Each structure stands twice: as structure tokens, then as C-alpha cells.
Amino acid sequence: MTAPLFHACADPAEYRDRARERAERPAAPVPLLTTGRPDLAAAAAYAAPLYAAGRTPPCSDTGLFLTPPAGACAGTGAGQGAADGHEALWPLLRPLARRWVHSAEEVPPSAGSVLVVAAYPQLRHDALRPLLRPAPEQGQDRSPTLLTGRDVPSLSWMLAKQYVSVRPEVVGRALFSETGTPPAGGPGEVFGEADLRAGDLRGALTGRPWRRVMVQGHGSDDHVNLGTWTLCGRASADVPSGPARALPRCGHGHACFKPEDRLIGPADVLTAELVLSSCANGPFADTAAYDSRYQVMLAALDGPAQSVVAAPGVHDSDRPENQVYLAHERPGGLAGPLNRSLADVTPGPVYLQYGFPTAPGPVRGSALPADPPADLSPDLPAERLAVPVDRAVAYLSGGLLPARHPLRPRLERFAAKYLALLARAARPYPPAVEEGLRSDLQSLDHAIAAQLRRDPQDPLAQYPEYWARRSRIAGAPEAFSCVCGLEAVRTVLAGLARLVPDTEPVLCPRCGDVAVRQSGAPWVRTDGPQTLEAGAEAVLTVALSEGRPGAPVQLGVFFPPFLRSACAVEPPGARVRLSAAGDHTAEFTLRVAPDALPQLHYYRVFAVQDLAVSGARRQFAVVPART
Image 1 (tube, rainbow, N blue to C red):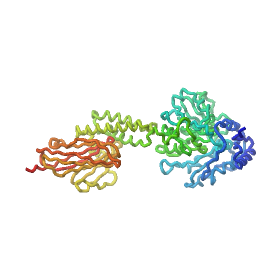
Image 2 (spheres, rainbow, N blue to C red):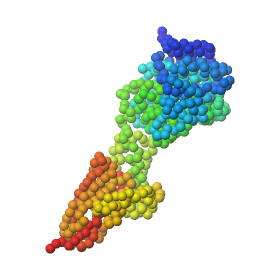
Image 3 (cartoon, rainbow, N blue to C red):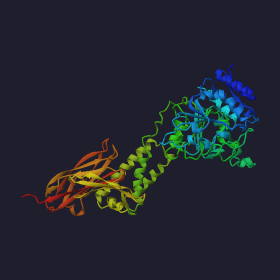
Image 4 (cartoon, helix red, strand yellow):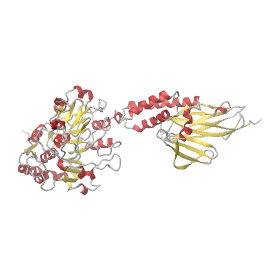
């Protein structure tokens, strides 16, 4: 007969003896204190399909043990003194950290991994604030691992679960989400909005053992909404109350705001790891809105899960975090990857890790995926969409283009399409988004270039003057070498309103306005002979730099209206592709008519990439042909 994993101790004295025995003899059952809490003994029996013996919990660099003041009662459910209850845990707690302290101020910034142990009444934000400040660098996560429970018996049960391993045959993982379901076909099982509305969610969550489950929806201290179902934190057992005294409507005898037959207790979810992905589902004792008898996170800790990831405050998790959850295969907990995913919009830590992370295990029905999964485009940042969207919106809404401009309908469709895709719920992007963006940009760039070739006086060509009148110089001017040999000056003109993009003109004391670009667009530099005889031809060079590497650019050359009958260029335009360094050099042939008047002429070159128009201007003199 297989020896039991856990041993429920209703007598505190027996628990102390059993804890010492387990510390000295790892083959002994792991004890849990059930004084006044028979529900915990039932939870240990319910968890049996998930676990096997043989786990040695990780050893943190620093342990923070928050105990109540001397003489205070931790609420063990049987009137046991807090000091006695906490002291009994020590044989099993001591191996979990190399060094133990009793206040967050004693934890140095370079402490490494930190384990916080406290019964829930002592798990206060004001006591842990030094450990919960946002990391100085975006994306870092230094949040501690926590062990807690609503009372000392609950804490002893959470501690006991750290000493068992997940059975190798328990491999299933699932995501239950009503707001941001990733595409099907990846690792794990996904239950989306339609499943939550029509399916048997209770059977899915409780009818089989899971290795990992995430529930994602709107919620609060006491619940997580899952379509017509609700993960409800109301305790069914006689458990301690406090510290907050406010009660939800059911605490005052009123019916629940959701159907009673569709309430599921977190302790009924048969999983080794439970991720609660809603707002404020794991508040601290001094930040909770509702009495602890109604807390979702505390109810989950009383259940079978040895690891619970919960969020103490508000956040905007969505499809990106759901995808991170499904893709996670690396050692370590999920709180860190989820916090890194949210670091661009929410200062962390957003999620906290309760219990040491459960090992990922293999995924049933699929090979281990890369992290992130292969069906997404991790190399397509949102900024690649945002930059051309900004430019399209500036053209449309900044007053540059008239109402009947031929490109307005296309620019409006582009802006609407990709503005919608900037939402976090649309990320990470599948390959189709990157392919669509590339196609749309190339098509619109071609249309802009064609419009400028047809009408060099088009409003799109007039943006430098239009936006300059609505800007001011930002920063110090910089020296810029002009093709004539003199030192030109480059300035940054910062738009006074968000709809006015920054532009960068280059002014030469001899040649005038020799170059201009929208910030972030390619630089254009053009050169050719300073003097040409009437009837002659010459080669013009156009050099591009600082463009988007490897991307195409539309080029064109044009003359002012009074010179178009006297000068021509071949080809009138070209499509080139920048090198990996973002540069390229092209050549055009300039022809001067035999009857061209001898005077100073000029031509302009434009380049279009990602909806931005860059330009350069070059002067040349026409002299009479020699006879």
C-alpha cells in the first residue's frame, strides 16, 4: 500500500512532533495542522491525484518571516496562540532560506531570491513595500515568492504542498478566458468566450487533474468572472474573518449577482498551479476591500494548488499575457514572465507568486514549443505599426490634405486598420499582420510617389513649410556637410501639437534648403555637376541613408514648373531597396534642352518610405552651348 503523502494533525502538539520528524526523515508524510479546519484535511485528500513524494523545495537566498506581535492571536480557528502556531512551522520552514530576517528593511537590495512567509493578517503592503517597488529598469522583476494562508493551519497546508512533486502523468494545462483568447492550435487547451457560455465549466475545472490552469476575466477580491460562470471566493468552511470588515452582497444575506448554480470555488479546481488573472484577486491584508472569508486567492491557497499566481491590484492583462502563459516552458514561475509582459503598460510587480513554481512538465499532444511560440511574430514590435499610423493621422487630421485629396480614402483605411491592431489585445502579432503591413506600406508608398510625380505641387510635397509654421526648434543645431563643400546646419523642428510631426531641415548658406526629412525617415543627399551646357546631359547621384534597413524606398526627381519644358530626367522614378545598413545609392540621367535659357536651375529628389516623404534640392547652372 502506498504511504500517504500528507498527515493531518488536529492536535498542535502532534503537528510539532510530525514537523520535526519530517525535517529529519524526508520519507515521512508531510504534516499539516488542521486544528479547527477539517476542510484542510479534505483538501489534502482531494489533492492526492496531483502529487507524489520526492520534492525538495528550492532554497531562497533570504527568508522574511513575518510573525504577529507577541500575545496576538493569528486566528488558528481553535484559539491557539500565534507564537505557538508559527513556531511549530519552523522545522519545515528553516530549510527554505539560507538566511532569515523579520522585516523587509533587513532585506538588502542585492539579496537575490527572497521568500516571504506570513499568515494573511501579517501580509501587509506597508510591511512589504520595500520589496514591491517597480524595478529600476523596465522588464526586470524582483518580486518575492510568498507563502501565506488565512491562518496558521492554512499556512501549514501551503507549506506542506511545497514538499511534494507533481505526478509525471499530470500534464494538462488550460486557459479559461472570457476576454482575450489566443488562436487555437498552440500548447494547452483553450476555453474561450463561447465555451464559457455554453460548456460545463465545473466539469472542466474539477473533473480531471491539471498541471496548470489560468482563469482570466474581470473580477475583484471575491470573484473572477468567466462568462456565465464565476470563480467565487466565499469560504464554505468556518474560517477566520478580517482584517477588512466590508462584505459582498451575499455576506448580507442577498442573492449573488451571478447564478448560484454556476459558482465554482477556487479550492475545487483540481490543479497543481492556478493563475488568477483578474484585477485585485490577491490583495494584501491592508489593501483588501472584502473580509478574508470572501477572498479568491485565500480560497485557492486552501485548495490543492501548490502554486498560485495572483494580482494584488488593477492591471490590463489581455491576450499577450494569455499567450505568455500558454507558451511558458522554462524553469521558474509564471509571475515573472507575466510581469515582464505587462511592464510596458503597468509598473510591477503586477502578479505575485504564492508557493514555489510548479515544474512545467510536458505538454499533452504537442512537442515542447519555442518560447515565444512559432506561430507569432516576436520581431514585429508595435512601434512598426505606430510610426506609419502617426504619419497617416498627421496627413489626415493635421490639415495638410484637403477633404477631396485622392489619397485620403486609402490613408483613412490604413489608419483605421492599424490603429485597431495597436491594442494590446491584438499582440503578439501573427505572421499575417507583418505580411499585411509590408504589403500595405509598399502599396501606399507607391501611391504617394505616383501622386508626387503627377503633381510636384501636391500638398504632400508642401509638408516642410506647413509643419514648420507649427513647430519650434528643439535642441541645438548640428553641423551637416553640404555637397557644395560648405558647412550646412541641421535643426529639429518639434511640432507644437501631437498632430504636427517633427521635421529636420538642412540649410546651407550657399544652396539654401538642401534637405529635409520627417524624423525617422531616410536622409536623401543628391549630387551632380554644378554647370551644364544647354543640350547636354549628366548623371545625378541620389544617396539614401538612415532608412529602415532592407526595406524598399520609392524615389522620384522633379523640376519646378518653369523648368519642366527645359529639363528632363530618366528614369522619372525608381524603386530601390536599402541595404542592411539602411543605405543605397541610385543614379539618374539629367537632360537639358538645347533651347534652355542660361540661368540657375534646380531639381528636387523625393524619397518615400513607410508613408514618410524625405527630400533634397540641388542647384546647377545652365550655360550656352559652345559653338
